[in-house]
Image (tube, rainbow, N blue to C red):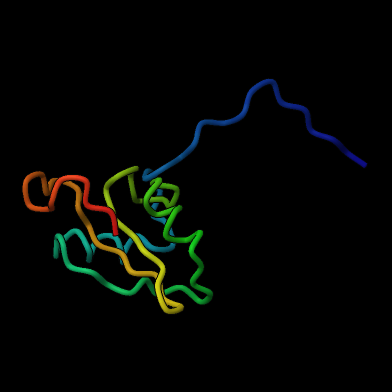
Length: 91
């Protein structure tokens, strides 16, 4: 067995390369505040949490709201919408 040792972990490459859902995120940015169903094969509540944390490439923490309901993951772009959404709004 060959083991490759490293001194440090590589930097996280969030948003620099186009991710699998980049087109989806870009479309949401064109329609701020409007909910859309995320096109995932197996929607999970963890998908919504990952989107809110900005885990997916092409997204940043707090840029999108997401909620998992009835077997679907709903997402909307909220970045730059200060004053439009109610304070403390949590889907």
